[in-house]
Length: 309
Image 1 (spheres, rainbow, N blue to C red):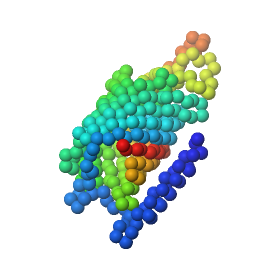
Image 2: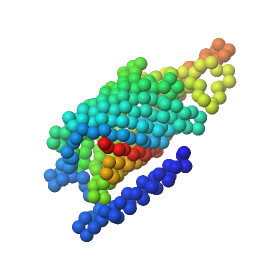
Image 3: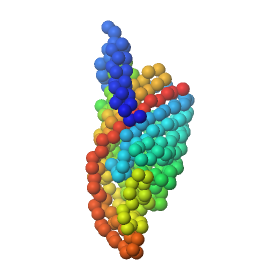
Image 4: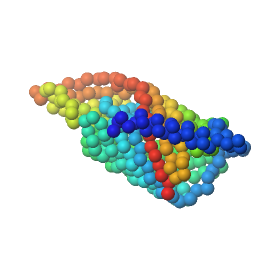
């Protein structure tokens, strides 16, 4: 299956290029332009109630620069209903498929309300997560989350501020600041949105991951000889701190009711966690070791197709 990914990316690229060339005429240019009107506000389509069915592939599960020791590659089907009032509801699943494990890792239910008020827009979202007991995702300790996104379209750039709460064994507070600008091409069918994000949060979700998931027995891996149990505790998990910076380039191309999307992202984590590792040996002896998390930049991407009906 993985050999199909390069072919799908090439097909995505050739479809866009071919459609752009076909769309050109003496009176219509497919050159890129800003997605703003003469007044500096983005053109807003007339909204109607509709459904969205989508399937996507994610090369790795990364949350605020943090990730599991193994790449978690997800196939993600979803169905969404968007009401013309701005209310929306969705259900999705993430199917894990890597070299050693295959399972539904998480099932998600989401509801929210989005609105536009001139150059300002807001989006409130509430999400319920149902994680598989075998999941090793760094967010597998989160059971419910709420967030509110503020966005201000200034024409030349769109800043955003998102604040949220993640509920689990202990509640996390998080926030994200973003800058983006959308460009359009191919008669507005192609949208390219360079985006920069800075993400900050407390680390209770990460503490839960180290205590319950990080060192658990995994399919296809060997147990360290002589050990009974290994757990970790993140020091000062309740301290709010910057966690990562992300640069991404979302691309989408719409053909009638279908939208093809590709989003490459480069995450740069900062402020490594200090973890106390507690090991219980089969002999009954115990050891405690303090380690500093090893951080590494991560490139990951998402490829998807969506149908509106």
